[in-house]
Length: 399
Ligand SMILES: Nc1ncnc2c1ncn2[C@@H]1O[C@H](COP(=O)(O)O)[C@@H](O)[C@H]1OP(=O)(O)O
Ligand SMILES: [Mg+2]
Image (tube, rainbow, N blue to C red; front, side, top):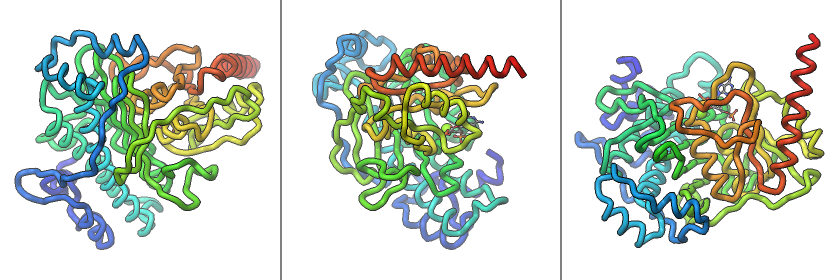
């Protein structure tokens, strides 16, 4: 972050009203943040009950129960686990609080962008403010709520204020690392469409917890192809902890509901999600995959990891992401979304069928693409993907 931007951020790293103009000033004021010298969070936030269901998967149970010597108090963890059935209950509650708060900031800024028409070109500062503000809020809440052990944050924005200069962690296979995309799907955010605040926790290289705040996603299900609402409540918070399943609740704090991927086993009845932006995923290749598979429905194109959330609750059956050659996938673009899907009973792999490996640092070690669906459809999806890629490569070699 440049110093000019830093100077324009208030005590909590929030934008001064002047930066956003008068209508934004109103929305910024509407945020229930206390501009006191000592940072104070606007609690009470909605109550977030924690997972009570013990793991049904033996590997997940074994994983959750394994000894973890580096954490400060094993006894505390054991007590927590016994009380809630979820050894990451405290982290989950903190993560939900953090992204809910960040979502409020992003909503205010997005409304301002959309109403003022700022997105029409030059002025990118509101987006920057929302991006940085979101990361600062998440970082502060996590630090205050989950205080034991060293704090490590792998985030899209690496340098913000030196006082809270987190986000530059390299991640990796050992220890615990929070993984954050403060605004996932910036293009959708600026357009007034879908975006997400995506936060996950890596423990010894595995994603063990993920939350996705999707302020513009209908709470019940997607009712039209752009992912927007045709009425009903909007704003969904997806969450998942390893071995505990996945849930959705409203961003206003309604009781969480368990979610699961759809059970469709015939591709004829399936629909698929992909990026809205053709620059982010090859729509010609995904079209060819869908055709080979026998999918009849047109693609549902929405921005951000909101797609993973929608897939996890069965709004659609398949997610396809095939970036153009040379693009390197970042861990913060898939960590939260992938655990929400896998804990909802789905499978997320690369184009060769391998699990995503989040232990390699800031990037995912793959360059072919990412696919997700339910267990029934995965074998035929994988075959269609590999056939379509082969065909595309053959066509390219003939040129
Ligand atoms: N050229 C690109 N190819 C693929 N993904 C990209 C590209 N540029 C940005 N992204 C990232 O893709 C993600 C959004 O994907 P989707 O198309 O599913 O909405 C975002 O994380 C976005 O980054 P950013 O978060 O910086 O906007
Ligand atoms: Mg992103």
